[in-house]
Image (spheres, rainbow over the protein chains, first blue to last red):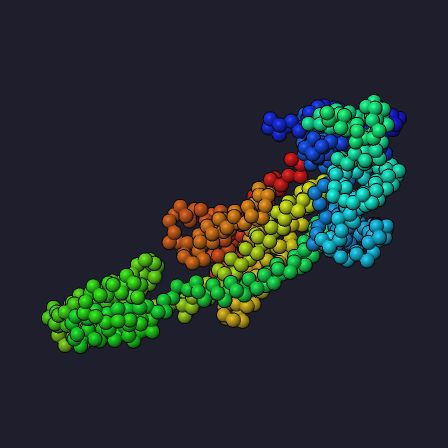
Length: 242
Length: 371
């Protein structure tokens, strides 16, 4: 893993909102092609950290580089190199599947022709051929999330950030969603994912466990399980949290 | 530029797909016009008059019949008691009391002058002023007639001044012709400002704004994409309103339509710019509605829609420097009713252009892709 290229490097990442410290001196590196999991209970500071890495929020202090760009001064360059899908729903409910794809393709600067080609492939791949002219508000949540993910990587970013992408989705769809993540990762895209489903942590190459704004553990799932003498990640998490 | 087109396309799809917005966009102008143009009139058509005639002479009856002959006055009652008349006014049954004291005719014949009393209900000051003006008009006519009957007999012939007024630009003093251009201003302002701002705030409520902010799209491109669709709609709305106005109210179009639409284009950039700026400082549709309600009430009432700006206190006229509606209210009437040309409205064009630059810069500065 270490011979791979460094795509995210965070040293002392800190974000304060008044007196509240959402992220307290986080240190981590993420390498190219990795599936990096960010774990933690609700309110542990996962979303705050991901927003900083995406250039949506400026940190209070720390040296942070994403895709080779500085998060203080080069947020717009970062944005050209990443994809982002958040827990809050980000497709337009009053646009159709096909219109959503076209719109996001367009604002990522793809050409008409490219959008058309990609849209066709994407719709076929997701099995949405019949629904392509249906409104987003009418299609099931699981499909929406798969679509949102596909749109987030349509412009072939170096890194894709997924903020609790599988929230509220059934286990079968979640499994399918992870198949998509693997596929993307194999093509060389780095995947940075936050979750609070511990079974999903097993699918990551490395996981970072957060608690109250601090990193409490960072390793591969296998190492974590060995160190904490646990059967699965759920046990690891419970042991750490205790 | 290309990314802006994608936003414009998306906005139009969203507007035309919205089952409640689309009918509103076309019904609101019709309602506004037909309701406001007829109701926001300052003509008094029905003045309730109560008469207290204590003289009961030929002259007093003549005066009363002069009022009766006017299409605006309606005699609601007659009594000898002023108290009874006041009671009527307190109950809002009478707008004006005409009180003719006893000995009115006698005094007139003897002294060549006499007194009558008019009591006007002035709860609504503007209405009272109009009632007063109308009444004075009738009384002075009556005056001239009795001068003919009485004074001439007395051998005191005087050549009176003959004043004839001629009203320019709206010869029949048709209030509708004055109101309609103002209503059009109201219409395009509300359309432009509300639609653009709400579309922006809705993105915040849906969370899609975050998805936009995480793309490399430029602020200016994004704001342009949010401005242009509503600019086009508002201009179309103006054309629609003007067409309705010509068909149903026969408003004159004395000046150049090109100039009118050119001016409107600048005005709408300002108005939509204000909408976009407000949307950057609010987070919910509720907040922005409240803000708009407040600002628009002030803007509209101060714009000169109902009351002439010239009769406002000078500080209020200064406030109007930042009221875009005041500029357009003046200019649309100038162009439509007077046929003013480019030279006549240059000052307003300069002012609004500066305004547009300032408000758009403010919106771009306040809109943060990274917080």
